[in-house]
Image (cartoon, rainbow, N blue to C red; front, side, top):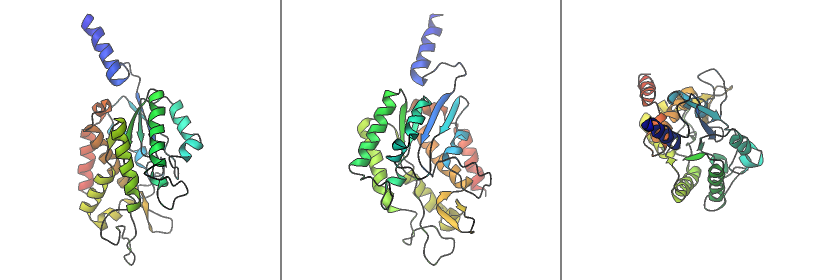
Length: 259
């Protein structure tokens, strides 16, 4: 009997709840790359936040608060952050920053303001009893002028340089605060370049004009990004790693490889 009581309190301290059927709540704070669009068609826009739940074991509920166009500043100013915290999540996947970059209305300096904003998010999460997990930014593609359907930069690389400094800031603030950081940026660039430009182009949504949108993924692209994040989570020291369904991750990866 004493052992059972000890086991119960160990489960509560490690995972935030005992095995009572109450789900672990994982909230997503991000912008268009991870928003839920419910488009239905595999070729239209999908965000990784609406598919990542497929790669968790039972007992995890994903609450996707990502919203297109939001920066680390506007996500707070518009009340989205307050709404997220009101859901009382156990974990927060934090990947705001794509709209903080150069030439964006919500620009924040990656050396100063952006880092301060990230620290504020981490402090708020701590105060709310949630464990924040930072995720570096996704890479958007660039059309290669003169090549129909091309999405790689004219340099031949799958990279959008204006997001590099903000991803670096995410890594460094996470390390400074001793918070987990999942490496999406580097891993996505590597995977896309291994696929090659033609195959990578097929991971992006088709617009109503029949052209490729190099900033937003279709369903397959969203699933690939979600799998990158989940492999990173599984290898992390976060207690949430125990709830990654690697069998589902690799099964879907195998299907994608066969396409």
